[in-house]
Image (cartoon, rainbow, N blue to C red):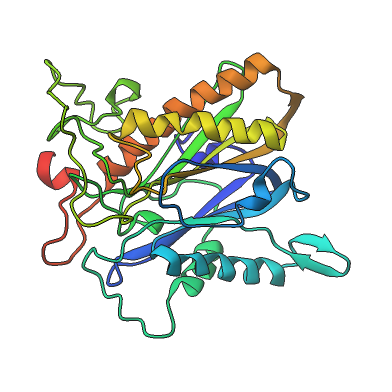
Length: 329
């Protein structure tokens, strides 16, 4: 186990980023089409192909998921991934045609100091193609990479995080998250990470929690404008799930946002969790096992959020938001 979403057999992850731009994207590639669904909780989402993931929709399986910076411009990263997959002969068969199914979600990172004067050629399509080309089934970088490159939070630099665990049922559950939250991943002003109760093996510093707990009647929130946030994520398992079961996994994984961020699911957030089931463990999942998978998913998601913040680095711009490591390490 690498403590990454790639511990779920059948998944690959690739990043592409531009530090001068202060943005990037991340691709989760399925070796074979996988059952998928989605749950959106924030009030300001930016998504593509999410209606297709409803239990009543015709298409049950997808080829890849894209998480991207760039606000609505970043949705174009999925177009690049679609084009590259189509050239490989992948996609949903419609007669002789193949249409790769690539849902995506974006976060807002347009005000982080990077060079965003791209004219009529936004860079995200090319970044999507690059991230797909780099997708691999082993270790991958965390922190200020991929979709987490330009991410920020209310208090410290956000980033890209991942974690995994084995559920009591024996299935592997993995999370990948780009943390760009309106809320605070710290307890008060830190250094304690809110996800600390779920930490394993000092994966984000082993600082524990404060005693006594500070008064959080007035929580710390991000200061610039509305709809300038969003935490976007993928939760995955090697279990064989239906689309309806995958959606329940996404719903329960959203609890990890509340365990790792405060507040979560705000009107200014576009919080979104995709769920993937690769069915490498083919036995049907019982109702009890489904519940245990969801409970594991919430804790794994919280840990991925903690790792995203812990591994982030400050961007090389004047006035850039400081990373946790620059403030507390």
